[in-house]
Image 1 (tube, rainbow, N blue to C red):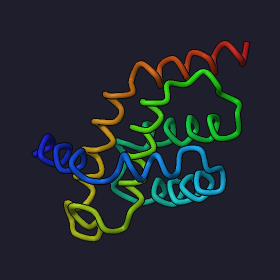
Image 2 (image 1 turned 120 degrees about the horizontal axis):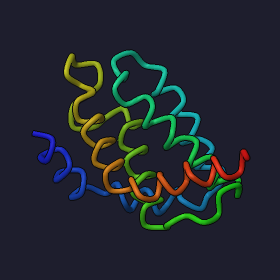
Image 3 (image 1 turned 30 degrees about the horizontal axis):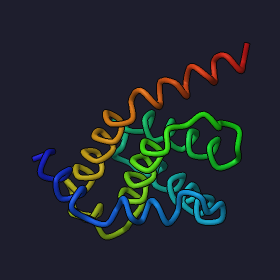
Image 4 (image 1 turned 180 degrees about the vertical axis):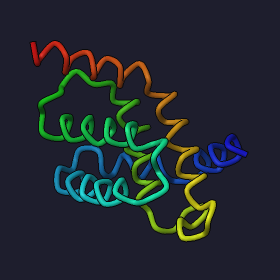
Length: 129
């Protein structure tokens, strides 16, 4: 089931949408605001930590605080975030299992960008010392 969501996600236009948003500070700011609202929803406890990490990562890339990022992984994260904040997706969120597709895409993006996000977390630790 999870792979079905990911396969359909990859066939969609999410990566193209990510490219249109990636280096547009105004669009990134709006995306981050939408993500903040999304993360406050109930039913996301298993993904909240990952979504907050993605939000912080995108914020730091957008503001220039984090410059040593992998562009391809950045697009994966942006595409996943666009997907989860989009009201119309494979399973609308108001249907009881509606978050399962969102959680599947977040898990996939986390796996795809794990090395990048680990590097980001390590940089944050170094900067705070």
